[in-house]
Image (cartoon, rainbow, N blue to C red; front, side, top):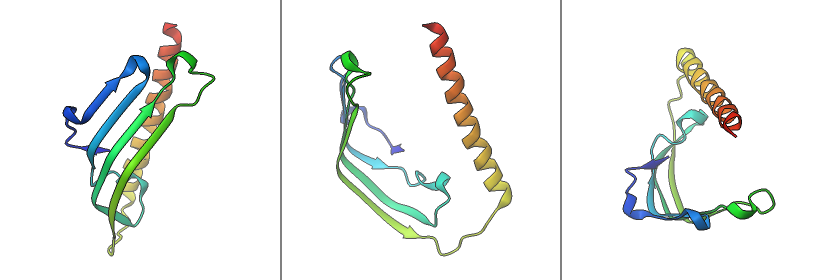
Length: 111
């Protein structure tokens, strides 16, 4: 969902459970899979912070903070229903879910 990701904008302290991304642009196609009648003209996130409490993973919440989120949207005036495109998107979406479940099961078997 992040366009032209620059590693200089990334601050990582994974041992402490901190990940910060600054000055990131949102991809114009980030909402395409949602099939909603809007498109992104431009999007920007000033700061995205994720804190994962590794030591207390099951008892403390993971926190995600977004500061300065700007999204300029435009309504789509021409919405053409394409059944083949819809079916392909549905198939890709389902396959992503299947892959996530399979990955979860593989990870669980490793432990």
